[in-house]
Length: 159
Image (cartoon, rainbow, N blue to C red; front, side, top):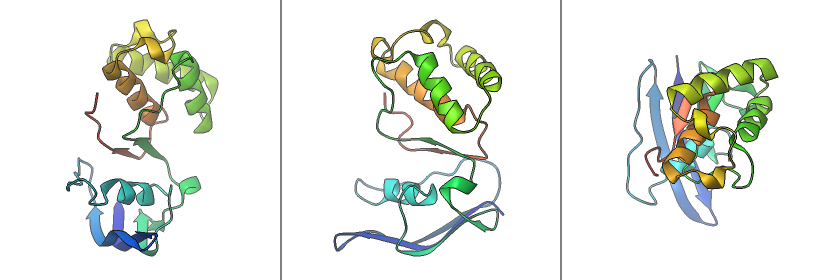
């Protein structure tokens, strides 16, 4: 089954941002959504995540309509999403708890991914002390801590 977008469109103040996009991702792997600046890639991503509402069309995950509260997706947005003055550990715990993780499971996931991504030394620092690349690693951790079924990365190599 997987992810399916069928004839999805979105208009903002009379301007078509996305017009009748359709595609399916039916098996595990990597799928790239490519296009020029302003082509509607981020808008499409935000619709498939349920962050913004589509005007027309259908978006399903494993045959069920996508609603933000009913899906277990991870999202790495293009914009930085770290709080500069807050310790990395506290931010990761906060986002893990928002996804419904128990504190013990969140701690285990934070420790695991910090080791994998080689950011263990930064976990107790405020985000402003990290380079852009390490902030991006932390943001990536936020998107995968809760073991999502689908991970959506918007401009993942920036920074």
